[in-house]
Length: 515
Image (cartoon, rainbow, N blue to C red; front, side, top):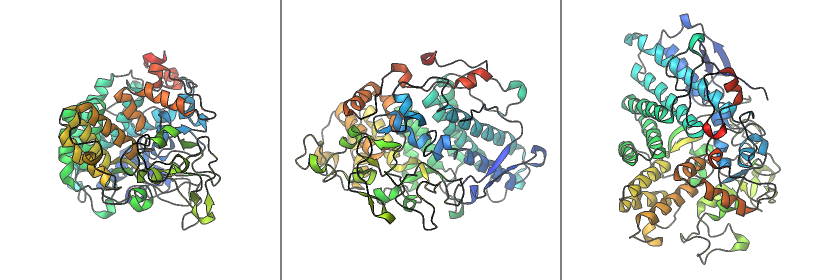
């Protein structure tokens, strides 16, 4: 694969539509616009903002791949949830200690993130100079807030996976293209500032034709995620306090949520949108081959066993568990997320899963089960939106913060709301109504695992909880054929800065764990 070095460009390339749904990214071409004739009108600004959203659709970010370098939707492969069976895609090699700074697999995350950041920086530099009278449909502060939100999202991903990274907040020239790293704390503060300011000016919703743009709820939810990662529990509560009245809910089907039918549900706080076209511009994270479901990313045994039975009890204590038919009497989120042998996974062919993966399980959540109505195959680029942030996550972030502050009784109804959608029993009816702080914390962590499985958040959770060593032990105990994970301590918690970037930018220093 060709390696790319990224420098923040002086000229801005506006990307119209690498497959994103709705008006903000509909076209299929790339148009380079001269800076001198651009950034004059509201239409120019809209196109410039669209270019930042377009950056999110990179294969290394939220589009993902099938038989290619892994994108963010596939990063549960960096945890105890999934085995990246085609290990060369990235997560599988990382977990087995085969990645070093010279490998290419994670350079795309770095390059694509800074590409989007550069677009946001240019927009933030240019929009304030445009006369207020030139804005008629969407006011200038809303555009500025969208750019800040998107920049914060890209920096949050960089901070989680690389930790100390260059913090670039203004357009660069060739003279200042090479910059050193900033500390994680400096990056965190910039993320919090961007999201706090964005939440003030973003609307709670848009007209239907503009669905998908960042909202107030999206900025507040991402702010809560940043605070959760840094254990700022009061910050999580302050952000989620403002989300609760915004009208989100969990009323729809959990299984349907991860199909195109769920894309407009009120569980979706922010998604990266894709459209289904006869082009190569759609996403591939939902793609599969017809021989086995999502053969490159397969659920691990310990993840499947983590789902409780319908009585709310673990499989180790529930009388409902049948080891010979382990998909029966289980939390409905399991069968909505995982294929078992005998399940039909390609509907038009009536093709049953034969268990022909290393773990004998297949990923169902998000994965297509047949060609589109227009004949686009399951292995071709598709149109499934990827949910960066869901309301269920917001509720569980708030529940965790409450427990960490010793207010566990207030967390019960939040966990119960998440369980209610799939008719699982309440905390009071299963675990009890007088749980200690540590007991309730385990309840919340369990709920996060099964509710958010295969959504790319497990590494985020394990890292901040300090539970990656225990996760490796679970993976090793699974004894998956062809999988030999190696816990490399600090190197299992952070990606190396790509050597190609260090070679070009002599101001950069490698993360201490990778020196």
